[in-house]
Image (cartoon, rainbow, N blue to C red; front, side):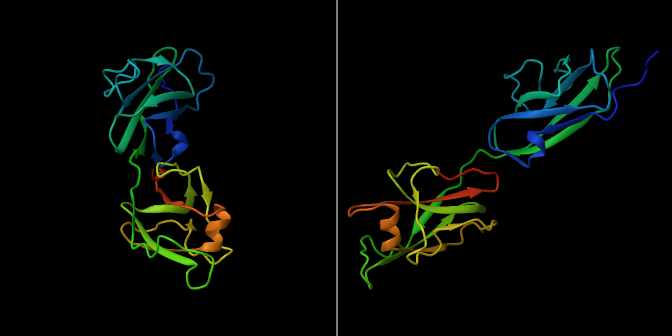
Length: 218
């Protein structure tokens, strides 16, 4: 005779991460029961109900599926807090208590604004070897970098980071919690610009910031 449901059910979305930057996440499932032969689980919550017909928005609409310690779940669309629920039942259909986990979906890229550009042409000669500009983001960010890139549409993982050996200032930062809409002043020296991209001619300088969720600006 067995009338006891599975003990200590647990669910963790993307290993307990605070944020997700994509709708598809991995749910790690657990129970202290062993073995789990013949066990099933039911998952529901803030999900995209077109992704898996067995995983729906409500407990009643979801179906029991074979127990697994890992299950892919597609969160419902739209940024914001998402909660996913779990129940496990054993091989004679005794159900566990309910477990849940919450994650914040953030798929919105931060937007960088550049202003107050002091010069559009510099050299390596004192007095004309420096230019400054300011940048800000529309959201709090944790990291930034200033790079020379091939095109204005280049991604953050391309191009060359501008260094500081020649005296450039604020061309990167990773201290975290940089406030939104508060300008950071960047100084670029001609020697550092040449080191990042040799030769005369037009250079595309681009600022990238990474928000709390890990999204880099475009």
